[in-house]
Length: 118
Image (cartoon, rainbow, N blue to C red; front, side):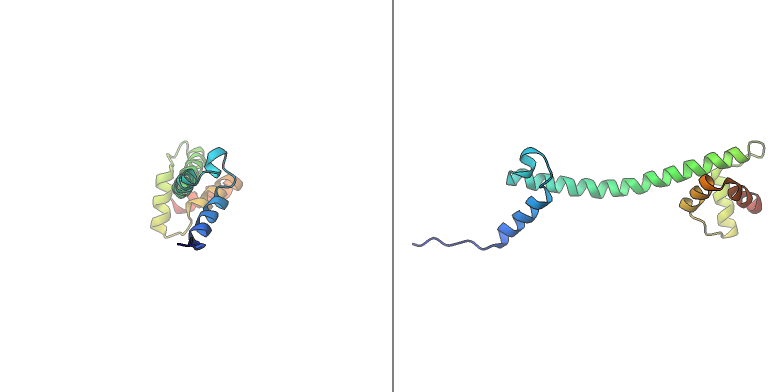
């Protein structure tokens, strides 16, 4: 019986995975089984860390806003939660990212916003 040549689909799939892991060290870029494992691990980690990055940035923005607001109202007991609550009551559409940028770059503007909505 003559030998049957296999198709190219499996080879193409393996080549694609090998290109993805070409920058990995050692057997992680050479052996097919570890290539598959490391590809799955890398893709899962990238997905997980993208979600974690969103949480971390939100925490950073909240911390920055809270620090500046507490600096303003040492006597008047201002806080982040009161600021956000008042923004929602007034239906002002300023998200936390923008408020944090204002807090860092232009504190006087944030002082004016917090004074107006109280």
